[in-house]
Length: 557
Image (cartoon, rainbow, N blue to C red):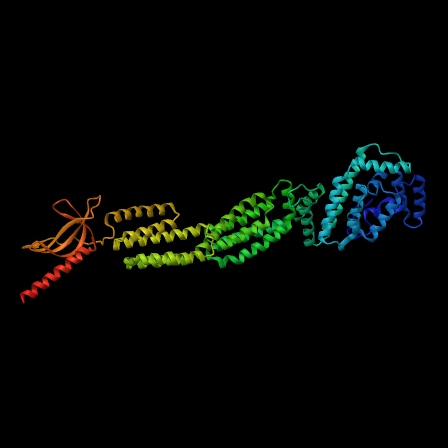
């Protein structure tokens, strides 16, 4: 008996079964079978009728026919199911309430009878249903159904379960061949789609073991697609090598090659997807896919590391995640690559977003280098305008780049404070600026530098207050009692310094107070620390001296 079944043909194995040829049921006795053979010989080929009769009356050959038929189903029910098979085979795809073997045989016949009207999703559905039925086959249940029918028909009971098991193994082989032959007759795109849907559904996207029949079909599919996959793997390898050679010429040179790599890789994955899913479900890697994936990954890594082509490296990495997620080793490593590249890309985008802040800091640095006395105003401008620019940048406040910008502002404010202090000795203003800089800073080294400057400025403020810096000590010489001298000692501090008034003297008498200085003295010489403003007392002194001089001149006239 021929077992090859063609999708779309009427002559499925059920139609070739001796029971169907003679119009017999599993409950007909030997006499009935002989009568049916004689009757059918008038309608069809006599040799076919005699062969069918011999098969149904021979105990061993009868078991083969029963296994391929509808054991456990009443004659009337079997006739109704066969009629449905002729009229609407797709409706038998999920027939219920039937013995497993009978259900399987009907599903296989329906699959073969439906032909080209089945789309890939329906084919996948059929394959899954048939695979599940094969998994549920129980030799003991099959033997029970056959023996119940034989008890009615008068044929000897099947006692050796191993005979049933052997026939079921042959039946499974037929089912597998039937599905494989049907798939082989499909257009390549529909075949791949049907296999992918079937394997993805049966394995829960590679998370669960598939029925044995699915694994067998995938193994056959892998053998049949090997030539195509080998060819595409060679194409990918050549394209990757060409891209590596062209990378030094820049992005425009490699773009066409990466476009081609993506096309070929997607073709590869479309064909390899069922194999990858099946391998994952079995705890294996599809080594050819793994090799292709790492070849492309090596290109992505070199494009970034050696040529700084971040965008194209990201593109290839995302392609790998899209195509090879079923391969754990590949997925894990590429996921790490993608995370690292995403962080780099984000930092670069954020870095560009704070360019206005960076430019403002550079501008202020240039201004205070030329005009250090304006540094306090520039620092205030930076704190105000920089905050507006930074808060308007499209970055999160938790981003490291956001804090980098604050550190840059803090460093520039510190620079302003130092420049202003050195130019004016207005240490209280410097203190305020440095405290604001410290609030902005998060970098440990920068914070330490700000803190060190704060300590210096605090010391200067305690020692000098708002004294003006001096480039050289004033003259303290006199000629015949006329010249300049220091008088007084006020506002003494713990460092031994004090404020003294610098006078123009006449006959060693202090006539005009010119300015005040903070000084230290060892009794013989002075060290000038800075220049301070005149007191109100000194201003009155000047006024009185001027009045006396005017009065003297008036009396002389």
